Image (cartoon, rainbow, N blue to C red):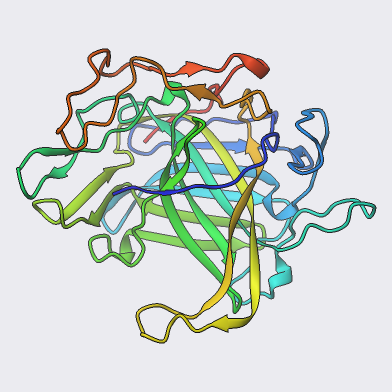
Length: 351
C-alpha cells in the first residue's frame, strides 16, 4: 500500500520562476528541459509569506535546470529525472558540511541541523491521475475483488513525482530514489512508494547517479511492483506512467531536510533486524518550486478543498461509492484566497 510520508513545510516557501524550454520529441522518447534562474527562491523562514522577497537561502537546493525524459531500464519503460542546483550536492563520502543549507543574516543566526535535501521532478499523468476506478493494482486474495490504484485528478492539483532524497545518517551520505504522489489538500502531503529493498521490485529497476558536483540523476521503472500479502498474486502494482502517456505540468521541486545527529548511537540494532539509530529527523521545508507559477503557498488556507463529487472511502468495496462521484472528472474546490490554487506550469511531454 502507498505509505504516507507527511512533510512539514512553512507556507510561503514557494517560487515563481521565469524562463523555460520545453522540448517535445517523438512518442515513447519524450523529454522536457527547463532552466530556472538562481537567487530566485523564497526563504521559508524569513519572508513571512511575502512573495516579493527573493534570494538564495539554500544553494544546494536552488534549482538551475531540470530534465524529465523517457527511457528504459532493465528492459522496462522508465522515467529519468536530472536536476542541477547552484550549490553542491554531496558525494557519498563527503563530510556533513558538504550540503549548503539555508543561512540567515548574522542578526538572526544560522539555521541548525540542515544536513540533506530532496530533489524531485513532479508531473501530472493525464491518463492515470483523473479520478477513475479503471486502474487496478491487484485482486484481493480473499474475494478476488479488484484493489484499485485510484489516483485523484491532476487538475485538482495532485501530482506524481520521481526523485531522490540525499541525507546524512550520522556516518555518511545516502541516496534514496523515490517515486510517489503529492496530495495538495489540507490533510495531504507527500506519499512515497517504499520499493527499495523489496524483492518484487529489484534494484535493477532504479538507479541514482551524481553526474557532477551540482547535478544528480535518478532513473526508475514506472510500473512499480511491491510485495502485498493481501493480493492474490502477492504483488501490488502502482501505475506511475506508461509510454504514450501525456505528462503535464512538469515541475522541479527541492526541499531542505532537517536532521539531528545523535552524539551516541541508540543501540536499536541489537536484534540484528534493524541498524542502530544514528540520526533523527525528517522535517522538510520547501525551497524551490521551479516554474510552478500560481502555487498558493500563503497563509490563506489549503490549496483546495474536497468537493461533494470526490470519491469517498469504500474500505475495499464494503461501502458503496459516493453517489455524486463522476468518474474521470475533477472534483476539488480550488481555494480562491491568495490568488487561487494549483496551476499548470505549462511544461509537458509524451512519455
